[in-house]
Length: 456
Image (cartoon, rainbow, N blue to C red; front, side, top):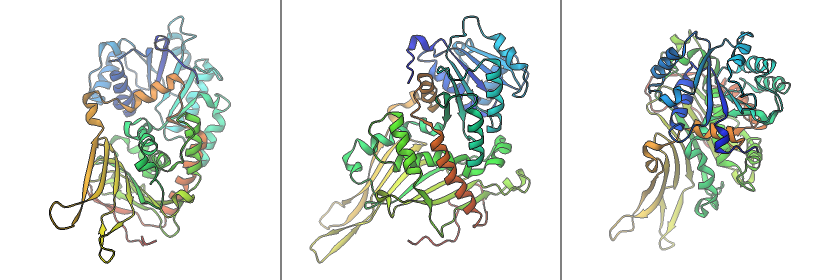
């Protein structure tokens, strides 16, 4: 892994493709704004978009869409360049705008664009000499999704290998940069109370949920081609599942973690007779012009390893629901208390909830006796608020991801082997989802239900 010291990192150049889009204006640039409060990681940030804007107009667009004010320090580092991805002359024009003496600078190319543009952009960067294959400090960052199926992901990867080395490719899943997702391994392996009960004999089900109140809004064109399964299940939810279910790595280096995640992903299967539930919020039908794209997906999976035999893994995601929430919920198997060996009292099942959004923290529900003379049990909760310790200084996930890419640390980036395993699962989920009709649900609903047998 190539290490970059702080005084060297300020010589790096960041190129953001799709700079006028939502991801850049609402996530990447706000993260850079927050980062610039501590240090100046990039000598220059080239923002590349199709719109013919000068820098003042670009700054105004970013502030309007992103809902924040760019600092003068960040503005001084930003250059805007009008570049249509297919416009070959625009790339040499960009190269000509680079400052003298930057030929040896580290370069990060952040492709916040549709996957069909990945190869076009990379090909032209390579042809122009802006990106050089096998140069370790030239790195490509790809925002998900990487393809739209196992087949198309393989095609993109195959063509990229003629232009770049695998070590230069950083496939982003921004959920992996979230504080509590990164905390999962610490919770699991640093606490004996959890590490010794992290198996199917103790845990009945694991429910991973990421739901939101917003609809597709201005992302309609992208979302209608993608849907909830490709947008959320294939990437974010399966990565979270892998961190929850993987075996203990030899150490917390990127390669041992990657191997353990791949191993568990290869053992994930659909449960026969339990096809996914798919739904679409009321009103999307008109937006999407009679589209059958799912905006809600719920799938039940199993893992055929001795550690997880009999535990169900439930993934849920959806738009236009009654709340915005992301969490990992472990439901333990029910227990009973023998009072006199003639009288048995059942206790409520324990639950461990790792909260990712809107708050970040951990809630553990366990049984305790109600105060008084009678032996009456009740569930009580121990609540730890992780985000309360950071308050206004809560770091954006993209800061961590950009820092790691700058340092050459790929721990929080998906390898192609992981991606292949995830697409195999997602493709199976999409095929099985056709067994259930698309449920139309009203915006703001709390649950989307379908009649199906849930017994073991």
